[in-house]
Length: 191
Ligand SMILES: Nc1ncnc2c1ncn2[C@@H]1O[C@H](COP(=O)(O)OP(=O)(O)OP(=O)(O)O)[C@@H](O)[C@H]1O
Ligand SMILES: O=C(O)C1=C[C@@H](O)[C@@H](O)[C@H](O)C1
Ligand SMILES: [Mg+2]
Image (cartoon, rainbow, N blue to C red; front, side, top):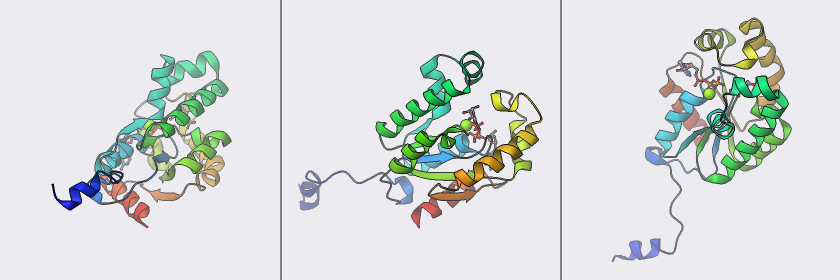
């Protein structure tokens, strides 16, 4: 056994940085509006960092045994937000991973404080015109069901952007391919 290997038994294993060499010592939490790419970009980011990926919306659905639309319809948004906070708290405690949150999670003060204190928050951002085209592909988002999605998204952006701006990192993805956005996040994290 060489000396380096012997030493490694006494030291914590190095944090995962995958192929990037980036030292990740806190979970990475993606925040931002519906359709911005939290799930699809987050999954690729995790792969590159050799970390697990988890989507908070999917975890809430699993825990409740209901879709998000069903939770909103049966129990209302406040109930959903409380469940969302509890699920995100559990995911932050779980282990080092990349976590995609639902678009409204960071607007809840308690959830936001948990994320800001325990994770690196990445605000993924894109122009509303781009988001409008993307969200039109799926009609599973309860907040976009009662009205014109473009108007709703513009209103949400006005309300939420000043709060999203508290994230540690801000990355504008727009129409770039997913991989480009992943690389922009990695560069920002490295700084
Ligand atoms: N460059 C890109 N960056 C991000 N998403 C993109 C990009 N190009 C296309 N998309 C598509 O936009 C759609 C929305 O992405 P995604 O589901 O990852 O968003 P989200 O932020 O997780 O949304 P939600 O808050 O509703 O869960 C997907 O179909 C995704 O493939
Ligand atoms: O922006 C929001 O408030 C939401 C976004 C989705 O990811 C879901 O979490 C839910 O539809 C609410
Ligand atoms: Mg998503």
